[in-house]
Image 1: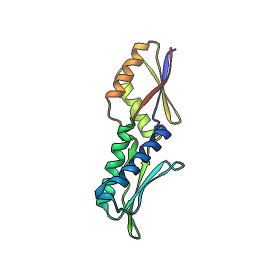
Image 2: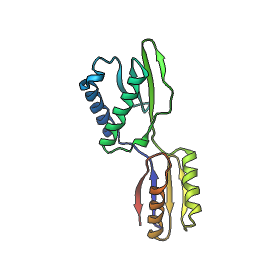
Image 3: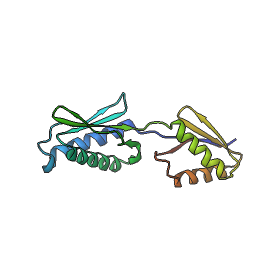
Image 4: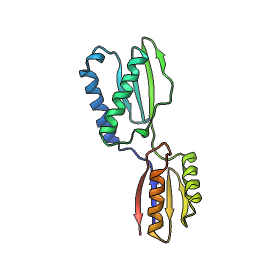
Length: 163
Protein backbone atom coordinates (compact mmCIF):
# COMPACT_ATOMS: atom_id res chain seq x y z
CA UNK A 1 0.00 0.00 0.00
CA UNK A 2 1.49 3.39 -0.97
CA UNK A 3 2.40 5.64 1.95
CA UNK A 4 4.56 8.56 3.06
CA UNK A 5 5.65 10.17 6.32
CA UNK A 6 5.05 13.77 7.38
CA UNK A 7 7.94 15.15 9.45
CA UNK A 8 9.21 18.51 10.62
CA UNK A 9 13.00 18.62 10.60
CA UNK A 10 15.64 21.31 10.47
CA UNK A 11 19.03 20.50 8.96
CA UNK A 12 21.48 21.25 11.81
CA UNK A 13 24.35 22.15 9.47
CA UNK A 14 22.24 24.63 7.51
CA UNK A 15 21.01 26.15 10.79
CA UNK A 16 24.58 26.51 12.02
CA UNK A 17 25.63 28.12 8.73
CA UNK A 18 22.77 30.63 9.01
CA UNK A 19 23.77 31.52 12.57
CA UNK A 20 27.43 31.94 11.62
CA UNK A 21 26.41 34.23 8.75
CA UNK A 22 24.21 36.22 11.15
CA UNK A 23 27.18 36.59 13.53
CA UNK A 24 29.32 37.95 10.71
CA UNK A 25 26.62 40.44 9.77
CA UNK A 26 26.38 41.49 13.42
CA UNK A 27 30.09 42.34 13.41
CA UNK A 28 29.87 44.39 10.21
CA UNK A 29 26.67 46.38 10.80
CA UNK A 30 27.39 49.96 11.82
CA UNK A 31 24.34 50.36 14.05
CA UNK A 32 25.23 47.20 16.01
CA UNK A 33 29.01 47.58 15.96
CA UNK A 34 29.68 47.98 19.70
CA UNK A 35 26.97 45.58 20.85
CA UNK A 36 27.80 43.38 23.78
CA UNK A 37 26.35 39.87 23.65
CA UNK A 38 25.34 38.35 20.35
CA UNK A 39 23.85 35.15 18.93
CA UNK A 40 24.65 31.72 20.38
CA UNK A 41 23.40 28.28 19.30
CA UNK A 42 22.86 25.49 21.82
CA UNK A 43 22.76 22.33 19.71
CA UNK A 44 21.73 19.98 22.52
CA UNK A 45 18.76 22.04 23.69
CA UNK A 46 17.84 23.21 20.14
CA UNK A 47 17.78 26.83 21.24
CA UNK A 48 19.35 30.07 20.08
CA UNK A 49 20.15 32.76 22.62
CA UNK A 50 20.05 36.40 21.57
CA UNK A 51 21.58 38.94 23.95
CA UNK A 52 22.25 42.66 23.82
CA UNK A 53 22.09 45.84 25.92
CA UNK A 54 18.45 46.67 25.23
CA UNK A 55 15.33 45.10 23.79
CA UNK A 56 15.50 47.20 20.61
CA UNK A 57 18.84 45.64 19.70
CA UNK A 58 17.50 42.18 20.55
CA UNK A 59 14.71 42.84 18.03
CA UNK A 60 17.37 43.75 15.46
CA UNK A 61 19.15 40.47 16.23
CA UNK A 62 15.86 38.62 15.67
CA UNK A 63 15.47 40.29 12.27
CA UNK A 64 19.05 39.42 11.27
CA UNK A 65 18.62 35.81 12.40
CA UNK A 66 15.31 35.34 10.60
CA UNK A 67 16.67 36.91 7.40
CA UNK A 68 19.72 34.64 7.40
CA UNK A 69 17.67 31.52 8.11
CA UNK A 70 15.33 32.24 5.21
CA UNK A 71 18.27 32.99 2.88
CA UNK A 72 19.79 29.61 3.78
CA UNK A 73 16.60 27.92 2.56
CA UNK A 74 15.09 27.06 5.93
CA UNK A 75 11.50 27.86 6.76
CA UNK A 76 11.18 30.76 9.21
CA UNK A 77 8.36 29.00 11.07
CA UNK A 78 10.89 26.55 12.49
CA UNK A 79 11.78 29.24 15.06
CA UNK A 80 9.61 29.97 18.10
CA UNK A 81 10.09 33.61 19.17
CA UNK A 82 7.31 33.49 21.76
CA UNK A 83 9.50 33.31 24.88
CA UNK A 84 9.81 36.50 26.90
CA UNK A 85 12.96 38.58 27.16
CA UNK A 86 14.84 38.43 30.45
CA UNK A 87 17.18 41.00 31.93
CA UNK A 88 20.40 39.40 33.13
CA UNK A 89 22.78 41.96 34.62
CA UNK A 90 23.58 44.54 31.95
CA UNK A 91 22.23 42.37 29.09
CA UNK A 92 18.75 41.56 27.83
CA UNK A 93 18.51 37.90 26.79
CA UNK A 94 15.93 36.12 24.69
CA UNK A 95 15.83 32.39 24.02
CA UNK A 96 14.51 31.25 20.65
CA UNK A 97 13.46 27.61 20.37
CA UNK A 98 14.10 25.64 17.19
CA UNK A 99 11.06 23.47 16.48
CA UNK A 100 12.04 19.90 15.69
CA UNK A 101 9.46 17.18 15.22
CA UNK A 102 5.69 17.29 15.22
CA UNK A 103 4.09 17.67 18.64
CA UNK A 104 0.89 15.85 19.62
CA UNK A 105 -1.40 18.85 19.14
CA UNK A 106 -0.13 19.47 15.62
CA UNK A 107 -0.38 15.79 14.71
CA UNK A 108 -4.01 15.85 15.89
CA UNK A 109 -4.64 18.92 13.71
CA UNK A 110 -3.07 17.15 10.73
CA UNK A 111 -5.20 14.05 11.33
CA UNK A 112 -8.39 16.10 11.69
CA UNK A 113 -7.60 18.14 8.57
CA UNK A 114 -7.07 14.97 6.53
CA UNK A 115 -10.21 13.27 7.88
CA UNK A 116 -12.30 16.37 7.20
CA UNK A 117 -11.18 16.28 3.56
CA UNK A 118 -13.08 12.96 3.13
CA UNK A 119 -10.14 11.31 1.33
CA UNK A 120 -9.83 7.55 1.71
CA UNK A 121 -6.49 7.47 3.53
CA UNK A 122 -5.22 5.98 6.78
CA UNK A 123 -3.47 8.33 9.22
CA UNK A 124 -1.20 7.07 12.01
CA UNK A 125 0.77 9.14 14.50
CA UNK A 126 4.21 7.73 15.32
CA UNK A 127 6.36 9.64 17.85
CA UNK A 128 7.26 12.88 16.04
CA UNK A 129 5.93 11.98 12.61
CA UNK A 130 2.63 11.15 10.93
CA UNK A 131 2.26 8.31 8.42
CA UNK A 132 -0.37 8.52 5.70
CA UNK A 133 -1.28 5.45 3.64
CA UNK A 134 -3.77 4.89 0.83
CA UNK A 135 -4.52 2.50 -2.00
CA UNK A 136 -4.12 5.27 -4.58
CA UNK A 137 -1.09 7.51 -5.03
CA UNK A 138 -3.37 10.30 -6.32
CA UNK A 139 -5.04 10.53 -2.91
CA UNK A 140 -1.63 10.81 -1.23
CA UNK A 141 -0.75 13.66 -3.57
CA UNK A 142 -4.03 15.37 -2.68
CA UNK A 143 -3.12 15.06 1.02
CA UNK A 144 0.27 16.65 0.31
CA UNK A 145 -1.39 19.53 -1.55
CA UNK A 146 -3.91 19.96 1.28
CA UNK A 147 -1.17 20.16 3.94
CA UNK A 148 0.98 22.53 1.88
CA UNK A 149 -1.97 24.90 1.71
CA UNK A 150 -2.78 24.62 5.42
CA UNK A 151 -1.24 26.99 7.95
CA UNK A 152 -0.10 24.73 10.79
CA UNK A 153 2.67 26.98 12.11
CA UNK A 154 5.50 24.53 11.47
CA UNK A 155 7.39 23.54 8.33
CA UNK A 156 6.41 20.12 6.99
CA UNK A 157 8.41 17.73 4.85
CA UNK A 158 7.09 14.63 3.10
CA UNK A 159 9.54 11.73 3.21
CA UNK A 160 9.68 7.94 2.66
CA UNK A 161 7.24 7.87 -0.24
CA UNK A 162 6.59 4.21 -0.94
CA UNK A 163 4.45 2.93 -3.74
